[in-house]
Length: 404
Image (tube, rainbow, N blue to C red; front, side):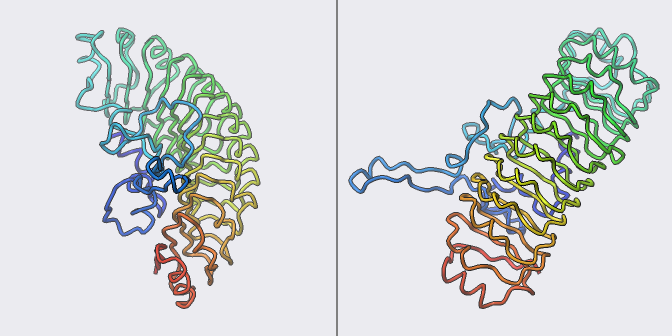
């Protein structure tokens, strides 16, 4: 269930690259999905003609810079356990509770309390957690869905007495706030608060020094994150899609282990200047927002691979956009561009570009020189055929996809 809930944060934008990009021979008709992140895409290293036997074949993974730390999250390797993490998609089956392996009621769990690792409570209408829950001294993950807590602060006090609790998922529980006592759950690594009515989060949530994953998806009343979010030094994944956020706190730049941020279908108008400090950021989905411009620091994201920025109000890109050497896919559909942004010619690993639903009527011939560029998606009505023919002659390997 958790897998389905969280996947929805990835499918609100047109370019749903993450799951399909690494799937060979994809039948999906979305042109940016099929080949942009193909691990078999290779290049030979520079060697002398007398040393051909020692030529090294570099895959796309070899060309991209990995995070500066060992991620504690579990990432999909698409069946190949020896494959390098591409940091595109979490392995939700391992990260979250398998309902079939969990205890389904408090009564069932209390029969052998020390044997309980996973507790899954679904629409049980208990109103509060019983004090006996503190007997579950080995429980690691608790998933509660559809509950209506009477005094959630008291419930957190009980959960704080569970020393091995690492994951707390409270979905569709009608929560309007999170009590400061959340800080007492010191070992939490995963917090999911999907589909609640949270207005604000307490600064104390930022005292959870082991927190890796924070999911706030579909809290449509949430207008801001705590100013002290930068204290979450180990945070790797932040999901804020479907919220009412207009920006991120300036301190977010201190979360230098952030790998993923999803905040699509929110109310984002701008990104903070400190955004460029997120040196390990690999994936962003900010589609369906109101962003008018990107900060000049945006080009300082050395490991960014996927930038989904469709359906915003962008007219231009920062001048240092070309510094995004690891950028593979850039989705800029349905913005306010009137000319092809020439900054897209500079990221050396760029493979796919989506520019449809803008006001662009010419694709510069220089795109033929972008080494790894494979696909451009554009509006068929706006681009003349002779423009496309010229690009095809210069570089027949680039697929020019007409969106409509």
